[in-house]
Image (cartoon, rainbow, N blue to C red; front, side, top):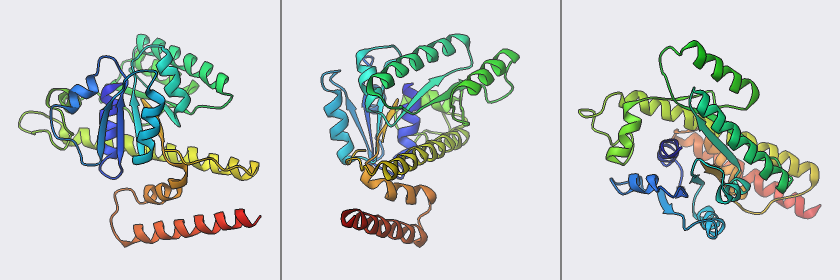
Length: 276
């Protein structure tokens, strides 16, 4: 889970402000963060535990486009708290039976939390540490069974030396030395595909909430996506995010035009709502 959080946060930080909260008692993410310089838009925080996690997420929301929470891979009260705060829960798993059993436990915990909160908590399975080449028959079967039953990312994070090297050297994939680590370019492309897909899923989640708000004549307060791992995004900034997502990694004038058009639409819609 920590490796997935590192890959997603560092890739997102190329275009967005990101805060990563390390809520795993092992503090592997903080260990990684201390080994090399991080992107300017990326902030890492060591959580002080379940009594403080709500305020830690809230503070991070105010200053970041995305908040990612790295959790311990066991059922706990802290995990339940974070799931309840999350706009998207990502459950990494491999192509092995033990991974599937762990994912089932996480899904059961999530279902209990959603029932207690009386709301759906979006979740996606992320297949990680999988083979980039040919899978065995058992691996293909397990992968297909999980995908048939639970929403899953199409992109898989394969076993790559560059991903493992992040824990040894710290920093980002782009900062690794190609003379010491192999397959960096393939790892970067793998990370970019996952990040694009996460952005697409988040965009769909917020579009659905906007539609529900229109139907219920209800508007939520400002809050920012949390991915458990966990992601949060300011609802008030969603339109800006959506416009940027449409032109992900483009830096020409069309991005600015789209952004301005979206913001003008928001202002007009808000004005109509006040008049109604």
